[in-house]
Each structure stands twice: as structure tokens, then as C-alpha cells.
Length: 263
Image 1 (tube, rainbow, N blue to C red):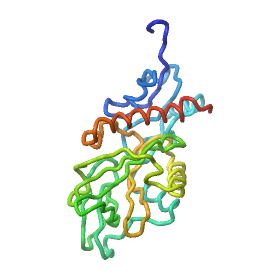
Image 2 (cartoon, helix red, strand yellow):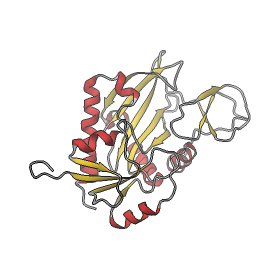
Image 3 (cartoon, rainbow, N blue to C red):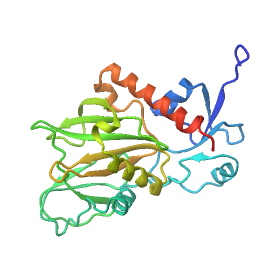
Image 4 (tube, helix red, strand yellow):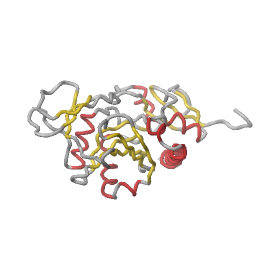
């Protein structure tokens, strides 16, 4: 306590965010002390574990009786679940059968954060632990492909990050990133369906990777993360002004959606 001011407490369970996670930065900006002590008095509780499959936890169940627990329903962020929920909400999909598909397709791990995508152009056998999706034509120019990092904060999308990658290396090496207003890149129907996806997916707070196919004009949600980073690669290649905008917008939205709204 300093000058009679006692910071509010944000309880993360079972894990506290690390310095590279966005909430590690923005909650102290908002005057909140971070703790993982499940017995501490908390002003907000967040289910937090940087893992694809979170196990049921009796402590979180207990905390849920006393608090709203952010992301309590988001315990599976596997790409299989992303694809399944996406198809249910949007009515179309990117999944293919690699044994019969006649076109270019991607094989990638079902687990989050592996960054192991590999492109095939001929049939192959299914491998356990991987999903197979058509190559979405998100070409922006001869040199770059474009993906959209969509930030979810309860009932708001405070901004979208346009991330440009080399066309010949679409899985890594972000070359440029720009923060844009949501309405610049997504229409209202798309935003509504994204929120419907998040509700069914159980995500109150997180980020989605979205691709727009220039051939059919439709968007595809291809990844979801409930422990977003603030030191992600786009922040390194973006101008400092964009990184500052990102932090301020995210903090403002988190405050409005989670800290000020009545339950």
C-alpha cells in the first residue's frame, strides 16, 4: 500500500501470465495486482493456462460460485475444435480429406502454438495428431499473404491487426503489421458470426487468426488462443506507435468489458 492506495487484485488460476502475455502488461496499467493465490480476495478471476487442453479443476469450480470466471468455458483450443465450431456457425469449412483432395492443402498440428504447417499438393495418408485444411488464398500481392489477428474482449473487438507474411513462407516471418479499426476489415455479419463462434467456443477473452479467401471473399477462422501475447512477432515488426495503440486499446476494452460492467 502506498499513499493509502491498495491495488485491486486479478486472480489467475491455475497459472499466472508470463511477461510475454498481454494481461501481464495491461492489468498493472489498469491498477491491478496479479496473483495466483486461489484464496486471495479477488476483483476479477481469469482461468489461465497456456495449454491446448485444460483439465477440469475443482478450484475453478469453487471460484465460479463466487465470481464470474473469465474463459471458464474455454478449456479446449485445439484446431479440431476451432474447425468444428467454425463449421457449425459459418456453415462452411476448410477441412479436407488428404487421401482424396485434388488441390493444395495444409497439414498442421492439432495442438496450439506448434507453427508446423506443411503444404502438400498430392494425396497422402492421415496422420494422428494433425488436421488437414485447404490452402486458403489470402494473397495480398505477388510478394505477401495477409492474415488477420482478431482480438476478442467479451462483447467487443477493439481492433484487428493486419499481418503480412512472405508469400513463399506463409507460416512464419511476419514482415509488416498494422493495427486497423474492426469495421475497416470485417463487415457486420462477419462480426456477428465471430461473436457467435466465441460464445459456442467458450471464449470470453482471446485472439483469433482469420484468413479471407480472395477467391470466394469469405473469412475462415483457423486458430484460437485464450492466452494472447503482447510480445508477439508482429509487435517487433510494427512501428512503436502501433504497439502503443495495441496496448492502450486492449487495456481500454478490457476495462470496459470486464472491470466496469456489472455482472
